[in-house]
Length: 88
Image (tube, rainbow, N blue to C red; front, side, top):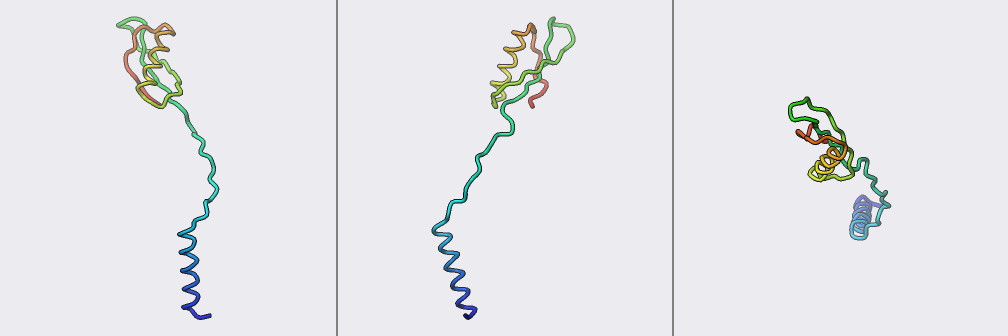
């Protein structure tokens, strides 16, 4: 078998595999993290010092997570929400 014949065979094989691909089995993806942890600065009175309030939510939207965290803080007895410290 000459080099040219080997080359032609390998090219034919490559073309066949390109035109008729065999699907490889795929593993299902698993999300490593779901949702966010929102840390809020909350107060009981307008001029008191800030306290940290952490809330874990299943939402991946920062806006929705913040709204859920603020609602949870108010339900927990913190009437004044200062600002968002961190999203993680």
